[in-house]
Image 1 (cartoon, rainbow, N blue to C red):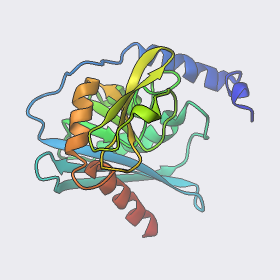
Image 2: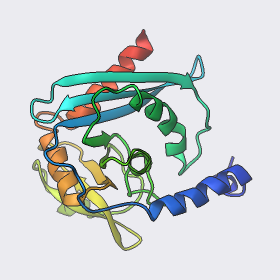
Image 3: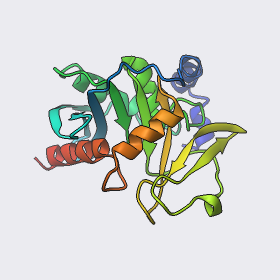
Image 4: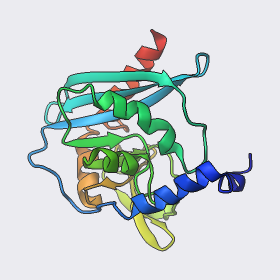
Length: 225
């Protein structure tokens, strides 16, 4: 189906409209409960053979980065892949997994977009609003926006503004020397500067945050089993 045709489907039109209302609820300032003790990484993986998906959440100690809790939830894929509506596909198993947690996170880092999204409501933002918890979008690939690649340094910590429709929607961040950058954006209840600070803390040795690495490992191991 052509991307534009999705906008004409009644079901999807309602969801695009819902995104507009959700985008008005995004808080782009720090509203974290300090000190941050526990940070979550989330991931969703798909088993195409069984038409099922697994949502996983890993809770890390904010200082040692040791895993203190892991939960997951498997369910049937209930929503098709629709451009711009990815969060409606991935959030249901994460919400169910979240209900199983005995330790609630103070901050969630998503391998997804925050406000760096056509509607300003990527999965990280959507999840943050649903759970009312500060979230960061830290994606491997850029969805929207532009930046000057020639001005982005090669050293860890170098950043460039990610601009979309003349607005700052995120930062392009080099998390390790001489490797591809990450695309960091506000999810909910956090400022971009604080988000950058946390992503740098969470990437002491690798390109990806420890939250993402652990969540990815969990869902992949669950799929194999």
